[in-house]
Image 1 (cartoon, rainbow, N blue to C red):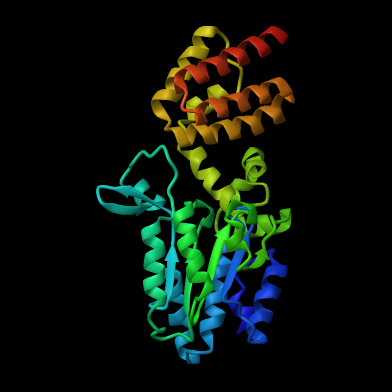
Image 2 (image 1 turned 90 degrees about the vertical axis):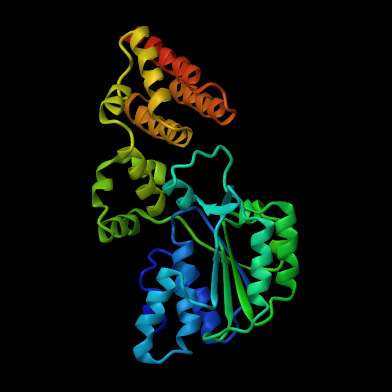
Length: 322
């Protein structure tokens, strides 16, 4: 059963060993912190771990039902918390905001109201499983009031286990870190990355070196980046892969980027161009200029002007050399 529970998780043997030993020795901690980069299996590991914890309470024929309910997120003893936006009196996750095509400048947050819901959830006994489980995705997005409220829950979690998923211990309050057992997740090697992308039907990503460079060993980031790539008009992308032939062309491209791409896509495009331009030209000044472009976009400078500066610089630098 242990091997089956963690079968979908590749390239994280150390994390799997720590979690399985905790279950086998009946020494499951009241709180864990799953630490590592986005897209390398932390959320999947949490689901596998929950499956293993709950498997002892279900009959063999009910195991597939348990697995399906965990995948669908409708198990009564599991509360999965994600950062949210506030919109017209509702809380929306990033996925829900995207479905409604909402444009938000600030990132989503785990809010104080959500921590209160966790407290309420843990205030009742589990209905079917041996214990209640709470998973907090992107725990680093908690503001200090929410983190302090969670701290009280971590001090007395009751018959429950709480899992915080975050990039690094430094990204959350030290008082939270001290109450969690840390489980580290590493970036995947090339073989594991290739295997996951192939198994999930995303093998075409392997033909895009710039995407793989951006992913840096993260299958989730590779898939997300490839989806971003598909959102950019092909002709625009083709034009950006070479230096603008004139100042007029540079200004036209900047206008098109500003008109057709939202801020999030523009920031991703900066990453993509950094990787692509370095592979193509190996010129540090161009990479540095792109880094300045990112800083200006994050500072909410006028995007069209930011891209005009970059593309004029690119035109002057490369056309002068030719």
